[in-house]
Image 1 (tube, rainbow, N blue to C red):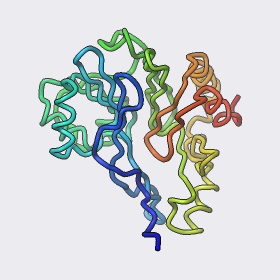
Image 2 (image 1 turned 45 degrees about the vertical axis):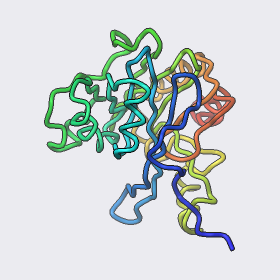
Image 3 (image 1 turned 90 degrees about the vertical axis):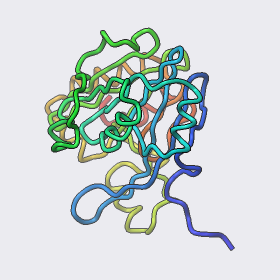
Image 4 (image 1 turned 180 degrees about the vertical axis):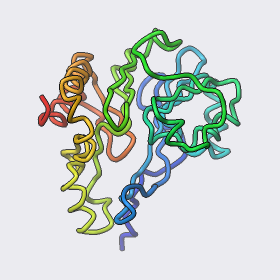
Length: 247
């Protein structure tokens, strides 16, 4: 007899190497959205190593075993909040690694309502960062939020948070939830930018299209996303598919 479907991506809270100097960490399931119904969101962090410095993108919970794994591969130097919704566990990482610099996308401090009560650096431009040698930075500005995406050049990996979501139907808890995912445009294997987020970019469609075209021009082999099944191959083709409504 088969057990219940695991909605997240175990094993959780552990490094999973996907390329040289590049790891993901699958985190716990969270619930997010309107007061009802709240959608289940599996979470994912990305870790990039540049020499011995670690770039921590969208941190997941820092459990003791993960902290030991992180310290074994390098030292966290940059902790990244890529958009106003991805900040919750950043204070825990800063307490554990006080020498790391925290970089936050616009409006995180406003969204966090006091949870971010320590100094941080703005993540609001395309270059001039200490990781520029190996990681390209691209802010994608919208009326609700700015998401900052990254491209790890050595592995040709695009790293995004919410610009694409790709929820597998087999992990959904019910037919009703699968219907909501399809309605929202985020049901795998055709996960895209959520339809409600598209509305927030209505006045920035030209800029959004230019940003997507830039990402495609980078020629990503893979696309790591924060929620749902990430794209292990054909990254540029997946971008064209996910943003065909825009391109």
